[in-house]
Image 1 (spheres, rainbow, N blue to C red):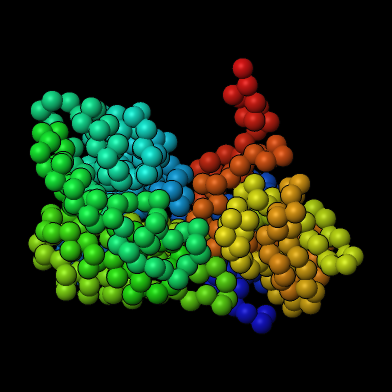
Image 2 (cartoon, rainbow, N blue to C red):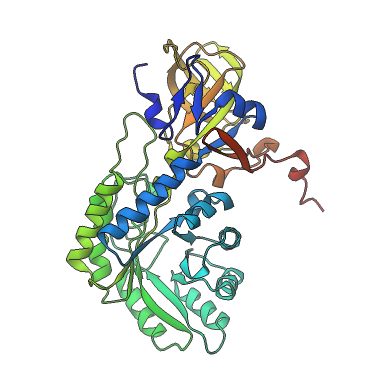
Length: 419
């Protein structure tokens, strides 16, 4: 093949002699037969290895540090449980993610709660669960915390700062620029910190910044460190996440090593040596550890060749939201040369339901299995029921064994909330 498609699949993915893909040691035709399609397949070994890489490389560079997984990227309880078992904390952004984190067995002290519009219910849930750090995004967070924290207790908080860093990523995932909906500019943040320092129920532990998501250049992420340092000395500095993940042949994000080298170099220059550092990897933690399997349902050769699959924007909104490019392969015909330019489209009644445009594949046929790599981030979490679509299962594959960690929705599930 012209490109190395296997380089986009989880490490260790192989192809059998008959041209069939294996993920986590499992043949994809066996996975499709057992779990159906579409299905999100996670190589559990690759997921664990990625978590250990972040954990070990961070603490090797800055011993008093911790990585917390940004759960919103893949908020499956089983994924969170892997992170907990590998020694990471969890970053959560809402009540449901708090609940699933607790189900995953996390130590609540290692949970960081985010959100620009936290409800009273979510604040109360975090306080009652013993969440270690609540990231204050506005003065209303403070009002709710002071009402929720019982007498005699103090809730640790970080204050989210707008670092004023413009990043070279899609506008929809930029968060560090002046005018972002997240965080406070330094003058406003300083005034709120002064207010909280007089509270007997809130303890300001430090400051937090996040530049954005899918950022390829680690220098842009490291640029947030100096603005945090300018806020003063604190016990904790949360440097956020944002490292980009590889989706396509053309993309080459920085490695974890290069990312951490840039971040820790800036930390050593600007931050107190005894401070605790927190990072929040999300997309770059999980994206490359999973792939989605589809079945080709229709091939329409007309003005263009449209290859329709049995999923689409119901299980992957990244294309419609951000114009994200993907690659793909015919998972049982990996040894064949691509010969036909086609458009991969979804099953949903929406013109924007296009997965890949264009792509060259071996001449597609109805019934082919299509495998789309690099779908571990922001697919399961944004899955929806458009057109009565039943959200797909999440399957863990490891050493040739597979198990569903989230089952496929049933027809009854679609109507479970009807009253």
